[in-house]
Image (cartoon, rainbow, N blue to C red):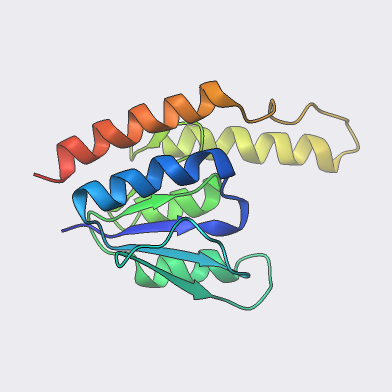
Length: 150
């Protein structure tokens, strides 16, 4: 059975009940990794790992623990790339399922935008996270779990 890893530091509150219901319904081992306590809900299937503060501490711990077929929930594209390279899966907060087929494109766009910002150009950030995004996440998560939790 797969394990779900949650990159917890930026996990939207709107997604917590969605994920919690899936964890409970399917009895999925879930590990929330962050640099502070993140509460998704009280469940025997959810545990937490608190890492030291630092830009990549949680990411490094997730990559260390993730195995083939596991699912990582993260909005961090470089982390998703590292997870995909280990033949695991990654879904972002807006419902995008990253794969071997698309992760390099997402990473290239992210890196390009980072270079543009570093050059002093002011760019728009992502649109605010909302209910529609939570709905897309729920649909993608349910679809993924239906396929991978038989």
